[in-house]
Image (cartoon, one colour):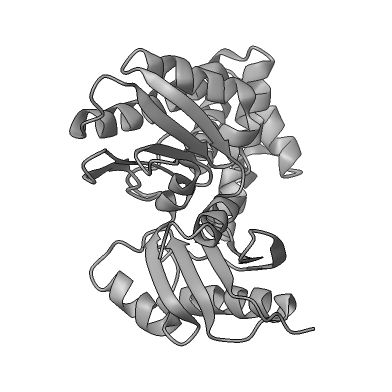
Amino acid sequence: MAVNQPVVCAVDAGGTKTLAIVLDANGVELARATTGPGNYVVHEVDRVIANVIGAIEQAVTAAGAEFPIATVWAGMAGIDRAGGFELMEAQLANLASTVRVTNDVQLPLGALASGAGIVLIAGTGSIAFGIDRHGESARAGGWGFLIGDEGSGYDLGRQGIRAAARAADGRGVQTALLPELMTHWNLQEPIRIIDEVYRERDRAALAECARLVFDAADAWDPVAMRLVQNGAAELSLAAGAVEKALDFSDSGVPLVLAGSLLVEREGYRRMVLERIEHQFDINVVHIVEEPAMVAARFLAGGRAG
């Protein structure tokens, strides 16, 4: 059945998947669709464009709506590079009357009534972004898996694998991460770790190894505990750098946390918050499970366009 009222669509295009959610004018979810990765820097541009457009088209079609819809907000990892915004806006122009393209870190800002605050994301990658009461913005982190993303799933997974390799050689402290990793990949000898890492070359697969690090840390493995603590410290540093660059006066900073590590790992989230509180006062903390839903509700409320 066709939908007659205006609908909006928000898209969260990240390193692992692209999620599109369609809401009606009352903020009721009509449909959603998921396609492949949407990181504008890490993946081929043509593939990213196809995944974003595909997710929108599938969700809107499932909702029974017709193009062009009222508004599309596409939040995309790595999009803030030369020409990125212009290219994606042109690609999406025929899908909606109003098109908005931002970095995916800005989607959770829809949770803030004032629009001012700091977003800290730690999933496959990591980044901090903020907007103050003057409309000035700043970011920290988000440098990508080769040179940054500290405290993210990929970072913790990679460091856990590195610690296991060092333990296997006798170059590092013995750690439960080595037998856990071998069990995880069903390996008979440590040298086969090389095959898994370099054959896969899949960030998501390596980011999944962060679970082994958290499990080992929960079991009081000293090496894993240090990795988790260092990751929490790095994330808090990113949030602190953004706060220092902006003006939040003395009222405390609204903080939005998103990404699987901060949403699902309560202990890790608590570590991060404790370290942030040593740097600046937090006004309120919003935990956002689905940034695309928050952004879509923001659009449906008429506060973005």
